[in-house]
Length: 153
Image (cartoon, rainbow, N blue to C red; front, side):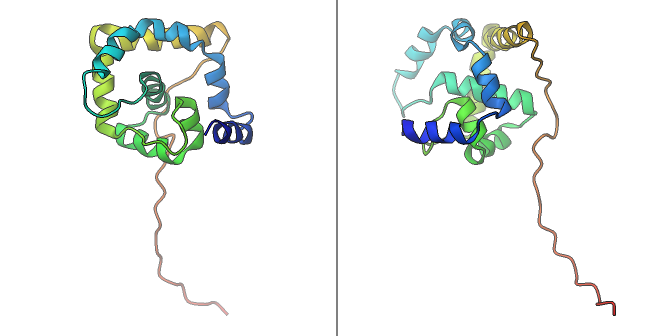
C-alpha cells in the first residue's frame, strides 16, 4: 500500500495541492484539535473511525474549493490529488457526506475548526502563500445529445 501511495505521488510531481500539503506543518495545526478528545470519542465503540487528521484535511479541501459535502465525498473518490492531500489510503473506504458534515459540526464546537483554519492560513501566509476559496471550481459535466444536423453538401 505504501508503494502505491509513493507511486501515485511520483506521478503527481508539481501538483499544487501536494505542494500545499508539504508546506503545512500539520503537527502545529493538530495541536488545536485536542487529539486526546477525538481518540477517546472514537474508542467508544461502533465501526472503525476515519483518521481525524485526514478528515480535517478533507474539510480544508471543501473550504478551498467551495464544495458541498456530497461533492467533496465524490471528489475524494475520483481525484487522486484530493485523496493524497487528505491522507486517505488508496483503496480505503471514504467518508460519506453526512460523516464529513458531522465531523465538521463537532470540530466547530468551541471554535476548534476556526482555530485550525486560522493556523493553516497563518502558516501559508508566512510563506507568502494565499489560498483563496473558490466557488464552482469543480464543474459537473453533462452529456447532451443533440439532433443530427442535416449534411451540407
